[in-house]
Image 1 (cartoon, rainbow, N blue to C red):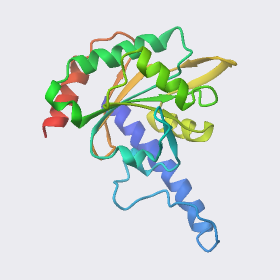
Image 2: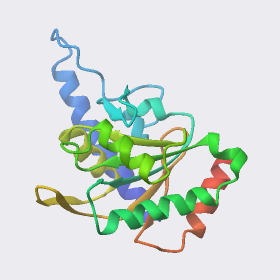
Image 3: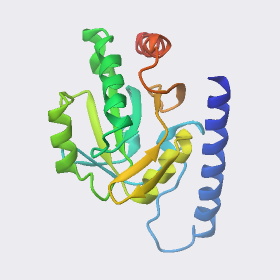
Image 4: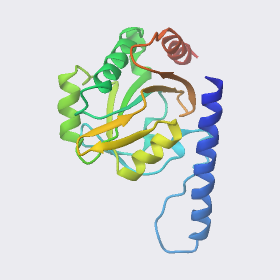
Amino acid sequence: MKSKTIKFIGIIFVFISINACKNNENKNSNTNTEAIIDSAFSGESIFNLTGNWHTQNNETIALSALKGKTLVMVMIYTSCKAACPRLVADMRDIESKMPKDKLDKINFVLVSIDPENDNPKRLKAFAIANNMDASHWTFLQGTKTSVQEFANVLAVKYKQISPMDFSHSNIISVFNSEGELIHQQEGLGVNNKETVETIIKTINE
């Protein structure tokens, strides 16, 4: 886990540095480009990533809108018939092991790697069909660029192999309330004891 965290920090540092340079180049322009670094977040926070996302309720948000809760995040796509159903089951299994009175401190987030097809309406239908439509579940549709940036930061690899099919990593990531990566679970149907313990410890701090 330690090596994964170091890798994550390195990737996001490079990403932020590159974008910071671009912003400096354009600081005298008349564009409305947002700064990539918000002084409210540490350099290790996922909330430094800019860009807007659409939720399953067709709300437009930035990742920073998720601040304040422990985040359990995974990347899937709704038409997946292989790994994604297992990842969804793994997310629901983690949810089932959370204290019921603490669910308001957790946000289970599923990010689509197929933004062209997974629009808010489709994400909403998927959420309902999988009993993931409670308030502590969030589904996100981004742009191809924002999804790729997000995947790079999490060290999640994916590749489109046909119009409706992707190969991808199977990683569930846990972030603290400030958007800093604290744990990753890799694989399908693996023992999630450490993941569950990490989440519970974080929400009780």
